[in-house]
Length: 103
Image (cartoon, rainbow, N blue to C red; front, side, top):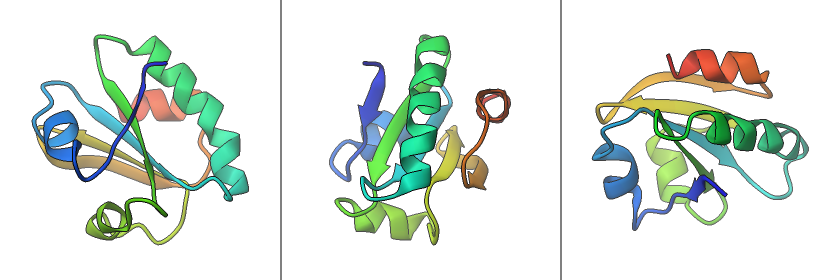
């Protein structure tokens, strides 16, 4: 699987220090819409190997990261480029919409 599990322990290395754009999916196992968008996020990860990183952050296990990004609703998708938020959207998105966020 090419989707990374992002935690506060690997966030700096995998996201902030990344030389590629990073798509982060803020989610939780009990969230129905999160489970709907999950397979789409995995497809995006497969299609962008070598061009972008894709990671998931479980908001229940990593509340500090969710708070740092001001996540109020899930799923929230955030794109980080050069260590800064380049794009973010709340709710279920189509694969084409997620891919366009990474452009």
